[in-house]
Amino acid sequence: MLRYVSHDIVFQEVPNETTLALNISGCPNGCRGCHSPHLQKNVGEPLTCDVLAELLRTYGSAITCVCFMGGDAAPHEVQRMAAFVRSATNENLKVAWYSGRSTMPAGCLAHNFDYIKLGPYVEALGGLQSANSNQRFYKIEAGKMVDATSMFCKK
Image (cartoon, rainbow, N blue to C red; front, side, top):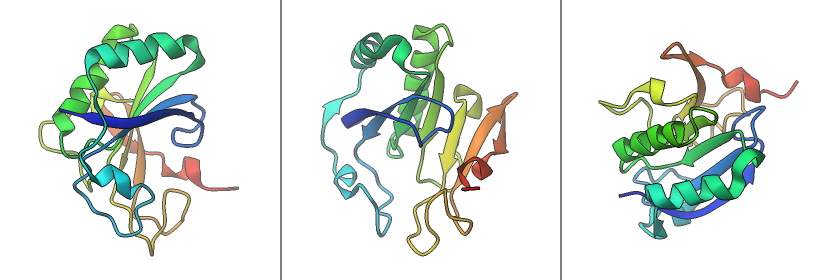
């Protein structure tokens, strides 16, 4: 079961989107220098389809994307919730997943998402804005993961 600690409207995690970001707890990655170490504990409220539906109703047309921030302990639940967002919104919202995993988990399909960020945070390499980052941001096109990390590079 996924648990979420908080949610917020964000503008940088998915470029060109107004995103409802859901902060999922229970992160198993333990990245050194993590900006959200409180999410490593299994805390917060259960993220159910009913809860997600209420958030979608609350924010309505104010958002263009839903991003699951974490969920690495239950990736198939993230995938299930992504499918729920697609179904509940008649595919009118984009869906993103920020994962600290290096690769897609077995059995998880990229086509359930519009964007996927992969890679643990490595303090010495920096985040997506860093040219040295090990993290990658993918746009899903025709079911394939296309590297779009350059969208984060400052010009």
